[in-house]
Length: 123
Image (cartoon, rainbow, N blue to C red):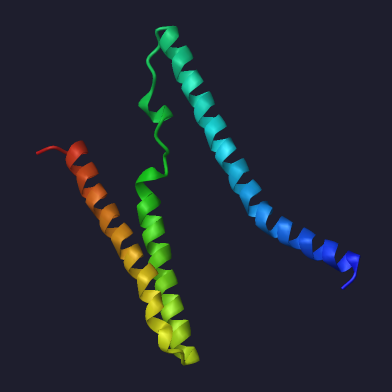
C-alpha cells in the first residue's frame, strides 16, 4: 500500500465521520440562534409594554407533527415488513417496531386532538 492510498483512506474515514457531526452542529446552531432571536424579540416587545403574542412561540405545524410522524412510521413499518417477507427473509417482523412506534404517535395525536377540542369547545 502506498502513501497516496493511505491518505485517501484516512481522508475518506475522517470525512465520513465528521461530515454528519458538522451537519448536526450546524442544525443545532441554527435552531439555537433562531430561539435566541425569538426571545430577544419577545423581550423587546415586553420592554416597550407591548403584549407578546402567544403565536410567536408556537409552531403552526405543531398539532399535526405527531400525525405526520405516525403515518410515516406506520407506512415505513409496513413497507419494511412487506419487503422482507417478499424477499423471503425470516426477519420480516422487524418492520413491526417502526409500525408500532407510528401507532403510538397516532394515539398521541388523537389524544391531543381530543384535548384541543375540549379546550376550544368547553361544555
